[in-house]
Length: 239
Image (cartoon, rainbow, N blue to C red; front, side, top):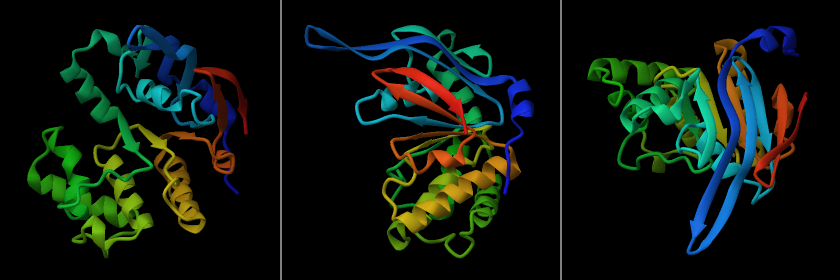
């Protein structure tokens, strides 16, 4: 069984850091805080699970961790860069290179086949068409879908569609894979296969994995668990 070398991980630098992050939404005349001073540091090379029930602030925390939104106050650093200092264009470029997203809802383009869906993020990084197609085929083969290259999402099972989504997240070779309830729409057997794939990407490809979930059964794959409640981290512990 694979064991984490915690001493090695602890010596690595941070890839993502949140410092006293607040996110406050205005609902008419009422201010609703979704995050309340969130502090979190993710080391390069670790597998972190963020565990919290519905309403704990997971979705908002995900947006901050993935640099999809700017905090009301506090600081978010992506690979040492304070994202609030970047233009939206520069932030999109940095995010596109550093983070790959895997969601509960697969978010695949129905009109595109597997290769087209995986190749899509590479367009925004300026990659040539030949490169995009070649790399998309390579990644799909890596996740066990070499027999589904020309199939559209409607022609694939839920597990296959999630594998396409994972392949798409890997298209620009990001350092971080951010997985938001990645097994939520899958049966238990298929969900297990997806988690094993994420574990393999962490172990063999040295990807930093951040898993956001409410499922206590999934955290066994992680190296560290952060417990989220009422918009802040209550505690963290190593697995």
